[in-house]
Image: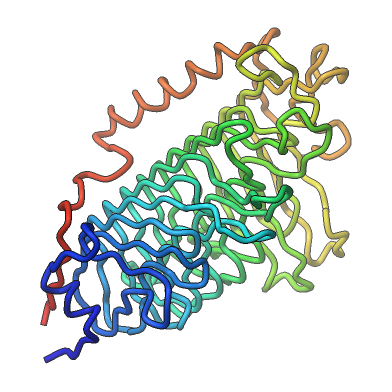
Length: 401
C-alpha cells in the first residue's frame, strides 16, 4: 500500500484547499511529490519559483492526465532520473516570478528519463519542454514522443527586462535514440508577448541512420526579439545545434519535413551543427511585417546550412535541404527577388529544389497558413490541445497495481 504525506493524502482524497482542487504553495512541501506509479489528475499551483507544481520522485510509470497547473517555476519536474512519464490533456500556465533576472519555469523538464509521451497538452507563458540526456533504449516504450500539443507564447522574459533563451522543445544531449517523434504540435508566439529562441532546438541530439529523429507536420508561428522591432535576433523555427567535438555526440540523423514555419525572425529553419540532417518538403512564410504593417528588421534568411561552431569535416558534414516552399522577406536583400532572402546566399550550397513563393509575401498570407494547417490536421482525424477538461476542484490518484 503506498504511503503519502499529508498534502499528498489530501490530494488523493480530493479534499479542497483554499478553494482550489489542491493548491500547494511555497514551502518545503510546496510540490505534489509523486513517489509511486499511477495516474494523477487535479489542480496544482505554486507561488514559489523554486517549487514545482508536481515533482516526479519515482521510476515507476506515472501518468498525469487532465491536470491544471499554474506557477512561476517548473510546472512538472522530472529531473531525478529514470522517469517513465506520460503527460496528456494537461493545461499549464506560467506566472512571472516576483524576482528579477528569473524567467518563467518550463512546462516540463525531464533529465535522464526512460520514457516520455507528452500529448494533447496546452501550455501558455511557460519556458516550454526540456529533455536532458536519456536512459531509455529507443523501443516504443522507452523513447520520446511529443505530439498534438498546443502552445501559446513561449516566454523567457524577465520582469526587469532581457530574458533567457528558451524553446517550445529542446532536446539536449540525447544521443542515438530511435523512435523520437515530434509531430503535429501547434506553437503560436505573439510579438511583444513572448520571448522564444529556437522554437524547436535539437542540441547535441541524434537519431540513428535507420531511424532518424523525426520532426514533422508541426505548425510554428512567431519568433521575435523584444521589442519585436529590435534590429538583432538569433532565434528560429527549427534548428540543429550543438558544440560537440565528435560525430557520435553532435546532432545527427534528424529528418524534418512537412512543417509549416511562419513569421520567425532571423531564420525559419537552420542546420547549424552536425551531420546527416535532412530538411525537406517544409513550408516557410515570412512577410517581415507585424499585423499593423510595421517592418521587422531582425529578419535574415529562411533556410541555411552553416557550420556555426566551426567544427572539422569529421563532425559537420552530409547535411542537405531539398524541395521546400519558401517565401521569406528580408528587407534590402535580393535572393531571389527584391526584399527576399529565401535561402542564405552564403550558407546554402546544399539547398536544392526550392519552390520560391512569388512577391509580395503578405501578412494576410501568413494568417491563411494556420487555417490550411488546421484543415490538414482535421483531415487526418487529429486534434491539438487537451481532449478533456480536468475535473474542477478534484484531485485523484489511481494505482494500476
